[in-house]
Amino acid sequence: MIILSKLCAVVVLLLTSLVGSPAYDTAIKETAWVELDVDLDRDGHKDRLAADIIRPSSAGRVPVLMDISPYYACCGRGNEAQKKTYDADGKPVAFPLYYDNYFVPRGYAVLLVDMSGTNRSTGCMDDGGPYDLAAGAQVIKWLNGKARAFSAPFGGTPVSSGWSTGNVGIWGKSHDGWLANGIATTGVEGLKAVVSIAGVTDIYQTYNDNGAWVGTYEGGPPLYNERAQKLCKPLEAELARQKGTSGDWNRYWQERHYPSKASSVRAAVFATQGFNDLAVKPTNFSQWWEALRVPRKAWLFQGGHADPFDLRRADYVETVGRWFDRWLLGVPNGVEREPAVKIEHAVDEWRDEPTWPAPGNFRTWWPKSDGTLSGTPSPGTTTFQDDPSVGRFEWLSDDSLARVLYTSPPLTTDTRLSGVGTVTVTMKSSTPVARVGVLVVDYGPAVIRNVDFTGKVGIRNLDTRSCWGSSSDVDSACYLDTVPDTVSVDREIVSVAWADLGHYASRRHQVPLRADRYYTMRFDLSPLDHIVPAGHRLGLIIGGTDYWEFLTPGDRPTLTVNLSQTSLTLPTAH
Image (cartoon, rainbow, N blue to C red; front, side, top):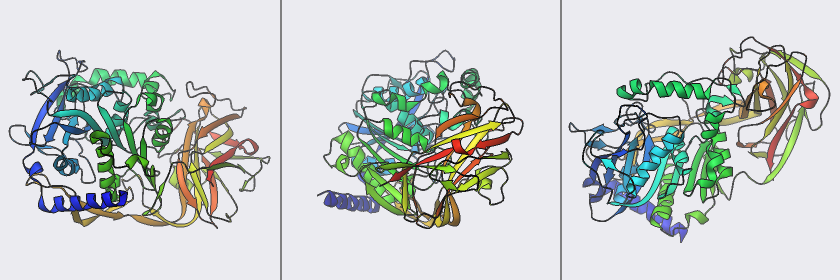
């Protein structure tokens, strides 16, 4: 029956894409400014979020799908960076992404909400903190008749949400996914389902790594509109003061750690994540996944900061549709009883699995002075000098002097590494501050998705398009097709970790290092799910400051590793 229902859904989708839909052609488009309970921009008026709405014109109440984003004016959404457009009177015309095209003909309303201070909203953002989450929750309250909205950012007439059933699903990628996850932790009534695509859940991991301060991200167009760029400066300064630059795990970061608030989540969560995402670290997924106690589903893949819409389009759109249908409409489609996880083990080779990580055990390796990894510890030390002008990709070079390398014997069988590993380093530094970077490397030939810091995420656009829903003269449902962007390699980074050695005792406080003392620090590696083929070798690389990841600690330290008290522990599936 499940196979038949999926086939019927695909047939309906294709027919709708080809012939259009009266429900979409005649849909109502409008904007409601939802009033918040705060005045963060201090202009003397309560802040308001602009919610651009497209909904069926037919009578009756409908469920709502919502994305709240700071990117609709500055940067666009999706693989083609689509932005909102408006007519001369300010009425919404084109809605980015496929959700309106696909879901409005199926009886949903779609809301694209400008985050505080962006595009047509007023107010200020607080970095995924309590005010941002309350703002998103306020929109859901309005959809349930428990908050107010108006026809303008200031003044205006009341706007009713009487057309809404109050059942809301929220989706979003990256920053939008961050907000979707965070709003779910408020437990707001009416939020039934979340689809989080590479969504942040722990902003500490974006700016710090176990005490190593990454720094602030500069460049690119401003997120704030012109008005908010001026009015929000005091709040921006206060938030910068709260976060600090020490890497200490303080109250600012704790307030924004969503896994610790997962017990308040009521909505069913569908999360997607690339294990090689360089923008949103996969740790955001693994912490969240482990903490959730609600119906959950995940798609995991070996690419970068990508949307599964551009990886496995037909299957993904159908799955998202069934997820929302199940939790917003109550359709008994059985999606919650299917395998919870779809995972890409090699390029475009996917498999359904009951859970993640795969069941198994942990195996520990110790580095030896001869450059190998062993199953038992052995005495010895090794020394190298930190070079903050290079990073993880340069460390892969055979002649790099900015790191030390240890490799296992060739593996005798295919070995699947699934879950979160740990590394224990025992080191001393010639300077009071030192960074540590760790790589787990698969040495052997492979074809992998092409991911790097220039923006490559493992997909390549074609010239052809396919359509997902109904189009109009001003809003096309047709999107560029994609194929995997691959590269042949003889070594591949499969897991990473970084730390500030001065936070060896606690992430809460950094201490200055003494040159005559070894310090032991244990920390998690990034989550992985990787099959190491028989004949390949595993490698452990230990470096200092990763140029690609965080700021130089100041003077270049000479780092000495105590090998017998340094180890790598990896999760090995049965």
